[in-house]
Structures are given as structure tokens and as C-alpha cells.
Length: 198
Image (cartoon, rainbow, N blue to C red; front, side, top):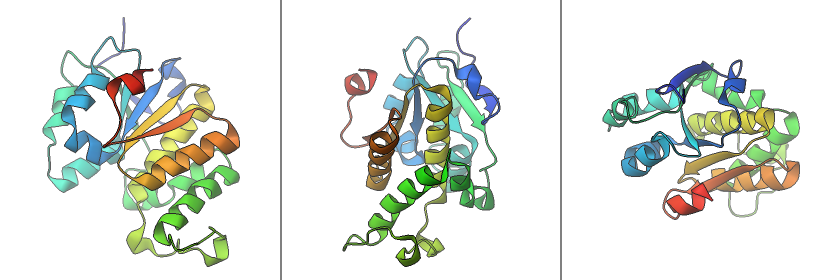
């Protein structure tokens, strides 16, 4: 039967319906900036499947930019998943990291984020970190990382994130190295379709 058009699933209760294929998660900027690649990933028949989360859709609508890509991906030639989450609000997104599979993974992500905030040598020690500086926090990005990490942790299958944020790429690398989970991030500016398919 194949995938329904952006089959709507409640995260994380219905995560098991995603079976064995790798899932590809987009941050909002990639959906807006590279619509051709987005359409490529969501096209039916690919050995990977694209995912859109409700908080990403909300962010696109709030930006009032290129929301047409969402309607395109709901067309008959495309398939994938749409996750309904508890992160579809500022307060919900703020708490998203609390849902990481364990505290060590949460800390691993926060260490990389702290380095981004203070590249002059911050070691990510919790008491010294600038995490309380909520004006700089990327709550939607934290939600994206949480959803992708829980997906790979529960499914024991690859999660792939496409993002332009270097700290997300470094967080994925750290999660993969420290916890041996297959979560990968490709930079929006330097990936290739073949590379992701491999």
C-alpha cells in the first residue's frame, strides 16, 4: 500500500508505524531554502522517508514564507510522515529536551549548544553554561533534535537531520560517538542527494 500522504502520527506513541526505513528530518530553513531537495526526499518510492513535525509547520506559518511547500508535499506524488507532538508551542518546545531518552543524551546536546554560545573555550559545565540565556535559545531546534533522537533510539534505525546549524551537526556526531546510535546530520549547504541516499 505504501505510505499515506504525510501520514499523521502522534509522537511518540505511534512511532512504531514508521517501520524500518530511515527517516529524514528537516529544519525549517531547509524546507524553505531548498524546496527541490525537500520534494526529492518526500517523493514516493525513495528508500528513505521525510518527516515534518507540527512545530516546523507552525514556524513556517509564523515566518509567512514559502508555506506552499507544505501543500506541495501533501500532493499525490509525495509521501512521508507528519508528527503531532507536545512541542507545538513555545512552552512545549522549551521542555522538549526533558524527553530525551536519558539525561546523559540531554547533557550531550546542551554541551554542544553551550560551545556555540561561547566558542572561546566553554567546556559545557552546567553551572557555568549560558543556558539560562533564553533569548538566544533555539527551542524549535531542540525539539527537532529530541524527535530525531527518540526516533532513532526507539526504532534502532537511522535518523538523518538536514540543517544549517553547525551545533546540531556537532550534537548528532557526539550522540553517535558516545551512545552508538545512528543519528546523522548533513549541512544544508554541503550535502548531496547521493550522499544521503548512501
